[in-house]
Length: 176
Length: 176
DNA sequence: GGGGACATGTAACGGGTTACATGATTCG
DNA sequence: CGAATCATGTAACCCGTTACATGTCCCC
Image (cartoon, rainbow over all chains, first blue to last red; front, side, top):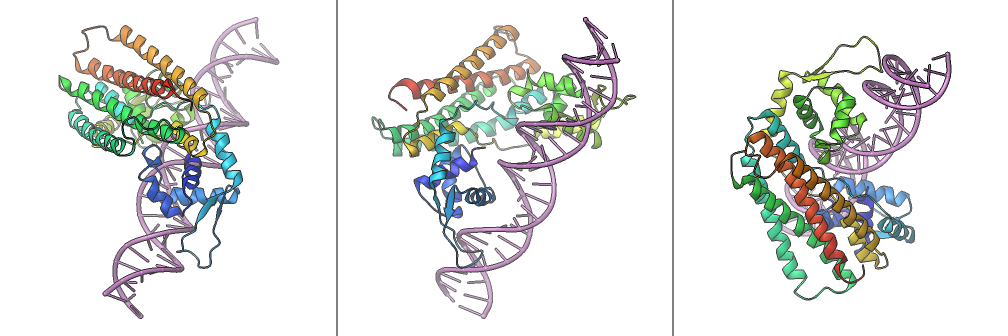
């Protein structure tokens, strides 16, 4: 439901082509809303049809970059969506389902998986902390723009930390 | 990808009909893997075709309950899946996208939404803590079965707590 | 001019969501 | 009987994923 809005946001920050958006996604919004290039192209085409964005007219056919910019209707759409009320979605994590399954089956050892998860979350956490140290130095970030961007990063940090502590607790004693 | 396995787990704990599973989901596995009754019926039909579960033969047609039980092949499938390696999925949360959008737009006030989210997470956390106090009293839960079930609940508690603290930090000072 | 990297696009499938339809059961 | 409720099921649509195809550009 929010892929088009993530794209509008990214295009407002900086207009660009589908491929550029795909690359940028890998390093920013993508941390909380991943998307493949096929999804992105499909959404861009749909949004252009709806009149939310405009793609540069093309001379050549398929292989030439199309540069997109956000139209007034697109900005309105994003404002409406961003301000609207929405329920937080329940988490959806299959490792929890696996724990329940292991509890019922009784003969599945989840410790290796728990270790793997812990390592992944530790790496992600370190990555986020590096970004924070680099982009949001100590007392800065009182301004609206930076403050909100920092908040997004803080969320990533908080969740990875929660994951990490939970894995440690799970592995702490006993066998799985 | 894990709905069928969640259903197998639930059916192993206790065989039952589609409607019963839908109700049980609302109170247990559904906290981490929600599903509507349509999804559940579709999956059950598919799993029966694949020979993972067996539904009681029916006299009447549509409106009669079908009782399902797990077959040996279904148990095997669940064991294989539960023990396999799998990457943790990146989180997917549209409130983060809305924060990014607000940062770009500059004139969207997210404070009301942040308050709403905080309340939702506070209620969920209290609910989980109540369940923990009731079902996992103090020093208990050293056994495998209970220990894993407790770990799932602990994850829910950890994440709600992380959300709550993050909302407080966001609302702490400044205007959004 | 031919090979490789890059940008866009098509096709097919499965899961998730919503709306609606139909058969059974219960109870007034 | 007739209304309400419950259990199952059908249909349509969109999103996410994977595999593959086609066109352009660049550089040797």
